[in-house]
Length: 201
Image (cartoon, rainbow, N blue to C red; front, side, top):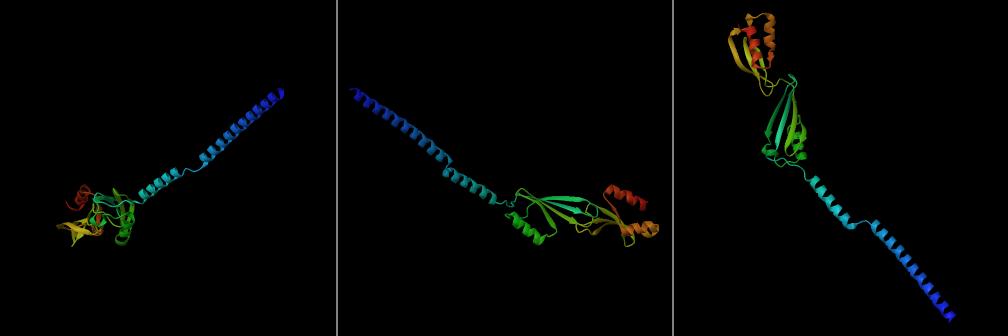
């Protein structure tokens, strides 16, 4: 009888040990499998990220184009007087739908002396330099021996504005005659009146 209980208790101990080992092995297995799953790259997320990246690339590749609503600002600097005149206008028909590279190529071929400062679908800024006076000036000078007033055209050339037939420069002293032959540049009408008073009185 005593041997029977000993045998039965041994079976219980062995059963308990097996149960404990099973639980331990199950726990270890679950831990390592869970760890491997967490370390494995998420292919679904990767695909989503790839799609997002493709979307970003597509947005970047979609270049801005000139439209009828694009403004073109042209800044012209005149070196002889140091003035800068800014002109703003809407894009010409020939520029419509051009992307930046096309517009740069066009400007390079047709307006090589014009610099593109900035480019966007809303506004393009151009800059150019002209080595003469800007059109905002008057020049008091001499024409056919008489005192005359000249304006400056877009090409920097003097254009006769008014001729004083009754005031020949021969009546003036040599210094004043030389000044008028060279031309006296003035910036506005007020300054023009002051200069004329010195020669016409």
